[in-house]
Amino acid sequence: MRKTEIILIRHGETVWNLERKFQGQLNSPLTERGIAQAQALAVRLQHDRLSHIYSSNLGRCYQTAQYVATIRGQPIIVDERFCERNYGPFQGLTRQEVQDNYPQLYENDKSGNPDYVIPNGESKREVLQRALTALEELSQRHVGERFLVVTHGAVLSILFRHFLGIPLHTPRLFKITNVGFNLVSINEGHWLVETLGDVSHLTN
Image (cartoon, rainbow, N blue to C red; front, side, top):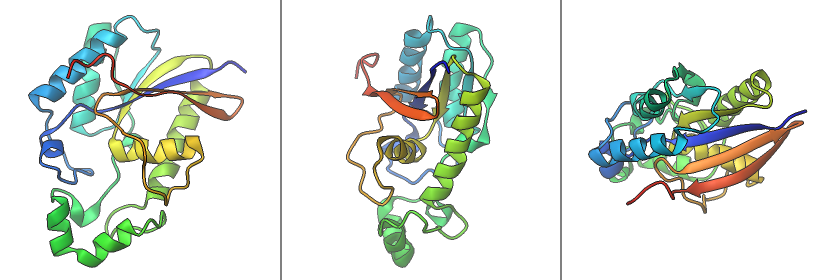
């Protein structure tokens, strides 16, 4: 079987990133810096051999993907399975506001249990299952190709733990940078992380 390559990108910086709020499945626009990051990514990928461009359905990802799609003249395919984790009542709040208003729920979520479901939200394992299923299906559809997926920080954090054999309950000891370049491949069912967090296309 031929190797399939997937470029995984976190969206550009948003207003709520700066305000350190849980974004989840709510929308927050890109900042000026976030737009510049997306433009830099587009330049980097302008002549890449991408067969398809996929994006989460949330605005910050779609807006990031648009810069790549426009410079390349390719359409964006929206896949809701790459949506950010649903943080339930945490969404739109800062970490301190969550601790003040939902102290027990916050502690439950921070306990490390990957199967803990935030009320009206999702567990880490649920996010892994939907995002990984999407990647596996697309990899089978595009065998031997190289395609782009624009998604979210929590999704990537969970996926990379899986790819690297790191238990979901352990703290994350690697960075997921806005518009950092991440490359994974799959060959005969085996995942390989080839590049993690390359920001050489960003100037600041």
